[in-house]
Image 1: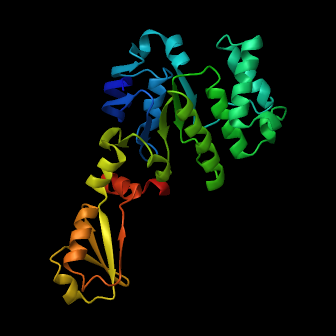
Image 2: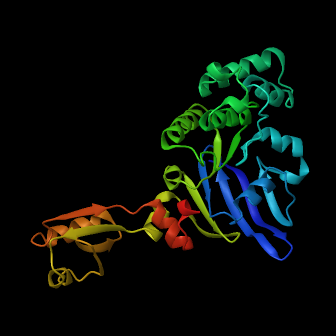
Image 3: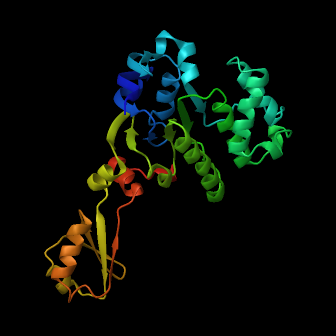
Length: 301
């Protein structure tokens, strides 16, 4: 896959505060790319520079092989954005919000009707299209936000914490729609989120801390580096656990042994069958990756 976003040596400061510090990364065409960090890590600042809403201090940002500073209209046609704070007009209906947004891209008349019908079917908007935004639930508003960002059929959809504050069921529905979008097109999704389970299916992840990249890679690569799998073993005394010659940690009802691979766990268990009578193998989680890479718990922020 080709690189649809290329960022090299990107910097942005606010006075003495370095918000973005020499960032360099790539986003490939058609992938789900997750950009993670606590509040203040530099995520939104980077997104605003990618979208052309904020001037960089130095570095380069290429979107679809064009420098962001060189052709603002071209970049805005390639990107759809859902910001943390909704841009919907609360006094207008769902239909009118999308119609006004479409007109900014010259999508009017029959062309608008066709595109609206496509999005309305995908985002299930027909039943709420004549309601004002102020009458909608949080999940309904988010569906309209995303539909609005997709009105001009962009190649890149940037989602800045799109499901924050929504219940698990609503988050699941929104991701069902997003996955359908990816399946039926070459849409690239650039995601920031506080929910690590949303990042676990990413093709690539970049983790920020204080404006700098502290970790990056595929979910598997990051788990292997920052979140080992483990064996939890119960009903065994400490003298017996020492016979395994593995580092261990005491837990409430037994012991925890960190392992690098499931193959290592299998070999250890087979060689010591008499000791492994009551145990479970637990895979490392993305929450552990973020905690070990940054020292913070993302979902607490």
